[in-house]
Every structure is written in C-alpha cells, then in structure tokens.
Amino acid sequence: MADIIGLLLPFFGLILIGYVAARVTKQPAEALGWLNTFIIYAALPALFFKLVSQTPIEQLTRVDFIATDIAATYSIFLLLFLIGRFLRRNSLADCTIQAFAGAYGNIGYMGPGLALLALGERAAVPVALIVCFENALHFIVAPALMALEGGDRRSPWRVAVDIARKVLLHPFILSTAFGFVVAALSLHQPAAFERFVNYLAQAAAPCALFAMGVTLALRPLKRIPVEIGYIVPAKLILHPLVVYIVLQAVGGFDPIWIEAAVLLAALPTATNVFVIGQQYGVWQERASATILITTACSVVTVSVVLYLIKSGVLPAQLFT
Image 1 (tube, rainbow, N blue to C red):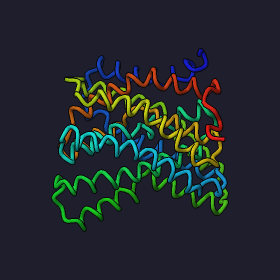
Image 2 (cartoon, one colour):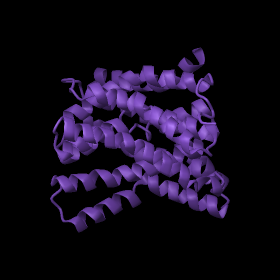
Image 3 (cartoon, helix red, strand yellow):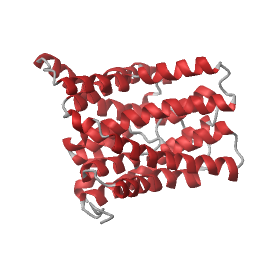
Image 4 (cartoon, helix red, strand yellow):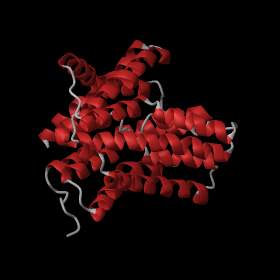
C-alpha cells in the first residue's frame, strides 16, 4: 500500500497545492489563463508527440482497441443520458452534460502522468490513443447534441465546420498526428529538438495538476446536485469496471493496455465538462460540483484501482 501512496501523493499533492494556493493568494480566475494556454498548447502536445513518435507504427494502428474502449465509455454515456431523459425528464442539453460528467474523465490532465508513473513506458501508446480519440469524439458529440436541442442556433453547416475545426486543429490531435507521421516514416529527430520536446513534456503533469487544483478552488461547492448520487459511482466505479470487462471480452490486448484503459476510466470528471456546460449555458453549477466531488472521491477510488492493478488482483485473462 505504501507504493500506491507513493504514486498518488505527487498527483493529488499537486492538486492540493494548487487548491491551497488559489485560496490563499486570492488571484482572479483570469490569472490562470496563460498557464492553461501553456499546458494545452505546449506541454501536453509535446508529451503526446513524444509518446507517439517513439512508438512502432503497428502499435499505433490498433483500431480494435480504440473502438472497444470508446464503445465501453459511450455505454456509460448512453446509460446516464437515458436516466436523465426518461427517469428524471431532463432536457436533452441537461442530459448531455450529465452523461459527459459520468463518461468524460480527466484523461488529458491526469492520465498521461499517472499512467506512465504507475505502469511505465509500455502504457504510453494506449494512453495516447485513448486521450486523443476519446477527446476527438467528445468534441464531436457535444456540439452535435446541443445543436439537436436547439441550444446552438447556427446552421447545420456552420456547426459541422466548427466541429471539424475544433477536432482537426486541437493541439492534442495535431501533436498526435505529427507523432504518427514521424513514427510511420521513421524520421530521425535532431538531438536539440528531442531535448526541447522532453523539456516541455516534463512540465505537463505538474503544471496541469496544479492548474486543476486552482480551478477547483475557483469553483466553490454551492450545492450538491441530486444527480451526484448516480453520476459519482457511474464515473468512478462503473466506468472502469465496464472498460475492463469489455476489453477482456473482446480479447487480444496486452494486459498493460487494459490496465492503462482501466486506470484512465477511473479518473474523475474532466474540467472540460464544466467548459461545455458554460459554453451552452447548461448545468454549469452542477457540473462544477460534480468535478469537485468526483475529484475528492477519486483519491480513494483511484487508490483502490491502482492497488488492484499493482497487486495482481485483476486477472490478466478474465475470460479463458
């Protein structure tokens, strides 16, 4: 258990430092802007490029892994969407944000650093694939469903163009695509360029986690939404469980790939869920509360998932 605490302490410790710093210094929310810009446009793209460009191309084209992981994640999305729509009679827009709250994990900020530290370099490829392809799909699904609701009043053509622009020009997607090209062509990278990329990549996890702590502090918990009762267990328990079972049922994947997918699925709700809600003026306060509560609860649940992985409790082959 001491090993698990040693793995988690730097991550949740950095979030705590960011949270305390924001509370003590009382900086305005705008002060976080340039740090987020650095994280999204420089540090994390450098990390994704590094992971992908150094990987054999045959490992990067595992469409079966990508499709299976996304199917598992969106089964959680669909379940929560249907609960909101038919049991709670919420609007389509509200149901969309609720579903994202239970299916969209903090895979960009927390995923790469935690997975690489806990599982090693062999987890780099599945982490990069999950982060890029899940994010790309989320960027498509959110505006598409909001357009159906009528919250987006632009023409279908304008919505489609905006979706394509956000997906194709997102720094995570672009950096991964460049990494694919370098890996496919086996291009030699100059030593100076590699050092530059490594320098940026090393800053990704600390800066992202600190910024996440600041963000949580700037969104105080005003009320606990009723939906928390089923969203939290769906995100932190059901999501990783479904990912594990579905990947095992399909079979043919390296155990480390399954472990990486399960670990990423166990992460708390992404701050992007609040951003989406804010963009469309839907479920903002409750999305903020969900992010804060799932992050706090994930200290325990992620610890349990890591213990199950590191102790070998999770069978490498569930179906034989």
